[in-house]
Image (cartoon, rainbow, N blue to C red; front, side, top):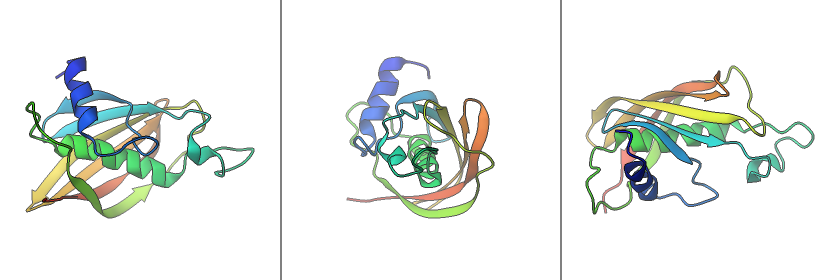
Length: 147
């Protein structure tokens, strides 16, 4: 699926709003299985103010959140018109590694793959690159939230 209109529809289904909506663009989407999404680490992003003055670095927690939002897209299997916001929350953070850092201007790409489902729990494995260099890799568990 590479239809820009469909990607915009999916972005609108994320429950996050700026500045916490980290995903700016969906690069790839396979319903219920995989998603790849990106953002630019803008020099004026809120998290650079204090992390770290003079040597700004995208915080690890922001990389994990970018992967979680991308994982929510990957887990979405209902992409039909009329669907509401994707209702998931981060339930667990597994082992993560952060082999490099990303700074202002970096093009971040998160790729999330659904590894398994058990009831409302969805296990996601993924990574985040900055300008093609691996900056985060690990697993998370999302929980579907029932209304």
